[in-house]
Length: 213
Image 1: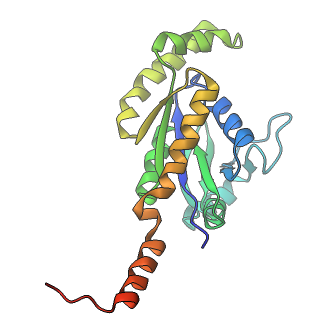
Image 2: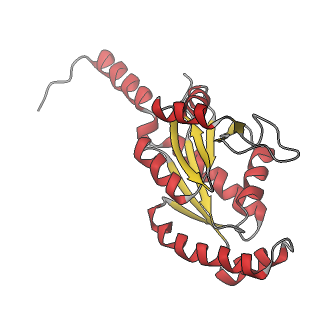
């Protein structure tokens, strides 16, 4: 029997290395599907529809909201961003373990709609390391880095809402831990109802209806 895939939400501070971990996870292990968000912003140079995002109009996005066809959505700087429900549910039904890389606000919305979803927060080993990684990019001014650190300080209050914290110190180790964590969810009873009911039914047929003591 084909088992339903595991829905995992991965969040983390800017600079924690989420993107690197997601890329390593997909390249190292099979059976993962990274959910693609929909957005109303225009594609940037090099981006393709259906790869980085599903690029749609504001009217199309608002129609998806009305149809409750999004698992979660938010609006940033006059543009909508959201997770299409159909793609996620299709991949899960195919047995794929689906990863949603989204922010804390969206993660909590997913948990409301999918209580069995696994929430994982990626963090560097210490705050100084986060600052070092942001500075090491060499692509942002100090003022921007300070804003990202301020945002991280605010986001840290939401860490307690997650199921697990995984430290990204060494990429390979973090990737392996995340993979093992997701795969362990397949063993939970809640994800094996069909099997447990099957075994219980077979045992009752084998021994007859057991008499109560």
